[in-house]
Amino acid sequence: MEYFPAPLEKLTEQFARLPGIGGKTAQRLAFYVLRLPEEEAQEFADAIMDAKRSVTLCPVCRNLSAGGLCPICAAPKRDSSVICVVADPRDVAAMERAREYHGHYHVLHGVLSPMNHVGPDDLQIKPLLDRVAKGGVEEVIMATNPDTEGETTALYIARLLKPFGVKVTRLAYGIPVGGHLEFADDATLMRALEGRQEL
Amino acid sequence: MEYFPAPLEKLTEQFARLPGIGGKTAQRLAFYVLRLPEEEAQEFADAIMDAKRSVTLCPVCRNLSAGGLCPICAAPKRDSSVICVVADPRDVAAMERAREYHGHYHVLHGVLSPMNHVGPDDLQIKPLLDRVAKGGVEEVIMATNPDTEGETTALYIARLLKPFGVKVTRLAYGIPVGGHLEFADDATLMRALEGRQEL
Image 1: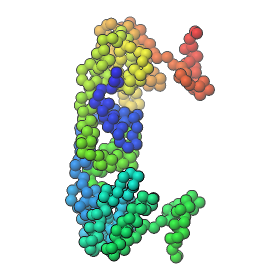
Image 2: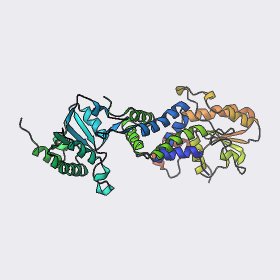
Image 3: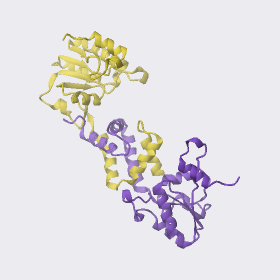
Image 4: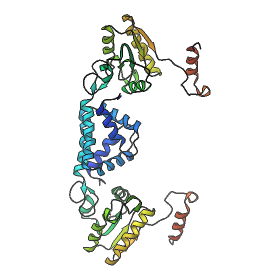
C-alpha cells in the first residue's frame, strides 16, 4: 500500500532529483509545499517556468540574460578591449563582487572534460573566437578554475587565440589573502614562489 | 548591479524559502532547474500545483488523500473499532511500515503548543470526537510523540474521550529495540522499568 497520495509522492520524487537533496529532505520539502497557501505554491511553480522561459544567453558574451544583451555587455562604460573568460555565470558574479575588473566577460558554460564527454563543441568557444576575430579586443584573461580541467581549457583556448595576435593572460596563482603559509599546499606555494613580485 | 537575471534571482529566493535550504544551496538548485529540459521543468512546476490542488484531507481520518476517502479508511478489511491517533501523516507511514497495526487512524495535523499558538481548534480534534460519538469505536490508541507537547496532547484528548466510555491507551515507552542500556537516558530507563512485563 502507498502511504501518501500519488501527487505528493510525485512532488517528493521531483525534489529528490535535485542535486544534494536526499529522500528524507525531499519529503520534508514536499510536505512544506503542501502546507503553503495556494498563491505561494503558484508563485513557486511560476518562478520555475519564468526562469526556464525568460532566461536566455546574452548574444555577445553568453552570460545569462533576461532577453537581449546582458547588463554588462550593454553598459557603455565598460572596457570592451578586455575579455575575461570564465566557466560559469557564477564566476562572473564572483569577479564582479571583487569590484576590480571593468572589462567584458565571456562565459564558456563548462570546461573541457573528456571524462564527462564535454568537448570544445559543447562549450561557448566558437562565439569567443568570433568576438576576437571581429577586432577591438586587446587582451583575453583566462579565469577558469585552477584545477586540471580549468587549466586544460585555458591552454586549449589560448592556443586557438594565438593566430589573432591578442594578449592572452591567466589569473595569478598564489597564497589566498588572509591564508596561512603553514596550511598552504605544496603546489600553491610553488606557484606563489614562481610568481613572486618585487616590493 | 544585479549579477543574475531577475527571474533567476526570483527562483533562487523561492528555493531559499524552503526549510533547511540556505542561500548557496538555493542558487545551486536554481541553476540546476535552469539547465533542465523545458519538459522536465514543466513537470516540476506541475507537480507542485498538482500536489497542492489534488491532495485533500480524508473526510473521516483527516489523513492526506488524493480526493475522497483515504486508502486506509476505504479498506474493508481494516478494524474500524480501533483508532490510532497520530500528529502527522508521516507518523501513519511509520506505523504502517511496522506492519503490526490493522486498525484505523486519526491525524491531528500537529500537537498542542501554546508556545507556537497552536490550540485545540487548530488541530483535528473535533472530527475525532465526532467519530467516537458515532459509536463502534472500542479503543483509541494515543500515538503522539513521546515529548512534552505530544504527551500534553495525548492527555488532553484522553480527557475529552472519557465521557464516551472508550478505552484510551498510549504506546509503550521503553528502550528501543537494538538499543544499548548504557546509552539509554534516565527518563527512558525509568519508563522501561515501570512498564516491565512478566516473561
